[in-house]
Image (cartoon, rainbow, N blue to C red; front, side, top):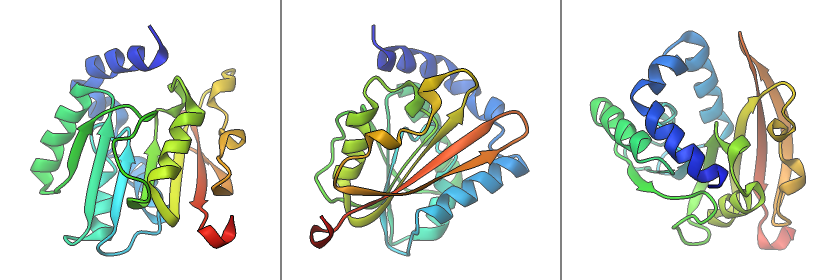
Length: 197
């Protein structure tokens, strides 16, 4: 059993309680999610993909930026998380197309999205390089890709994966966020336009 299968089982078990433990409605959680949406450089009418959408805690902030003319797509490896996400977005009136899938093989065409977000699971991906390459592949040229996760002490796998950035993207930098009990890193990329390659 690989780490993706273990994550799927774990997230299916956690899904009913995830929002409660995550504290996504706390002041800190709200600030962090507003910051994530800001980093994506979203405009009205944009098409955005969130990989590992979880229970959809980022989607209200994304929807506020892209409006009714925008389109949100969310992918997750866990059926339980997607069910909880569906429940949450229906309550909030947020339209989104949710898909069960693996970040290593995104079911979208090249150059499909104005922005791509992944936050909170890449530390445990079985193939980080492939997942990052896929996120860049489905982004439009010039699009922003934001990837972030927790920094866990004594775990090398929780370092920002700057050495895995594909050649068709540029590293815009890594920032660190320190919350009450833990830290997070945020890696920002931009997909290169053909003339820039």
